[in-house]
Image (tube, helix red, strand yellow):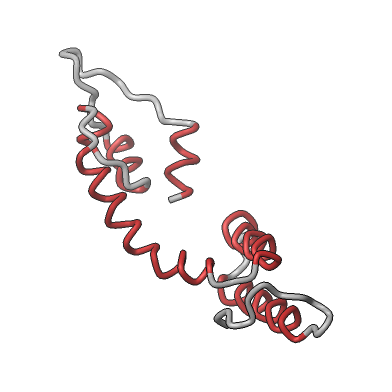
Length: 122
């Protein structure tokens, strides 16, 4: 998802076909494919496919959101840092997850930390 957002911030230029439509060059078609851009929305402003895709994506993301919500509030900044490392610094997901798991285990093992709810998921 981030790739298309970066490209939307610096969109490629299009040329007109001379009759009011963009010229579908190989370069434009490659950009559309690489960035998973919906052509109905891009050229016609029809958001229905994008809305449908967003609903489907939110269903796909639900397990992760449940997982992320299962951690104590003190751990959430570390979770965000892990995700940023994966997205922006290309840290492998497994490596970041393993490091985060260690932080969670150490946090939960510390007897000096008062927790609101001790029955959080691992």
